[in-house]
Image 1 (cartoon, helix red, strand yellow):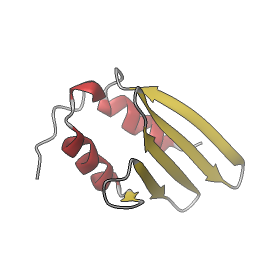
Image 2 (cartoon, rainbow, N blue to C red):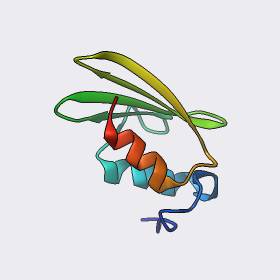
Image 3 (cartoon, rainbow, N blue to C red):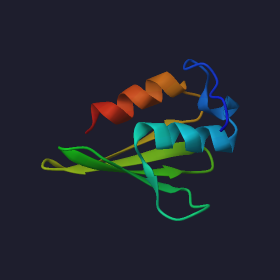
Amino acid sequence: MTALPPPQTPLYNHPLPALEQWLVELGALQAAPHSCHWRLERPDWTATLVLEVEELSVRWSGCDGEVQRQFPYGFSRADVEAAILAGP
């Protein structure tokens, strides 16, 4: 298991295994081994997360429709996590 950098560390300073570990700790499931697509389910919404080349793309689906946002890897892990878990 890879140790995660401090929460205020920008995502671009996380090695890929640490990013994957972080997503697992959030409760996300990887679409397939070695896939950049992840799925996170909560009671009121579901999010599809994609590790893109220059950003983390998140699409929430729920009772209010769909919302999509992109988070540059320069954002801290703590800020991105708070935004993801806040939902649409």
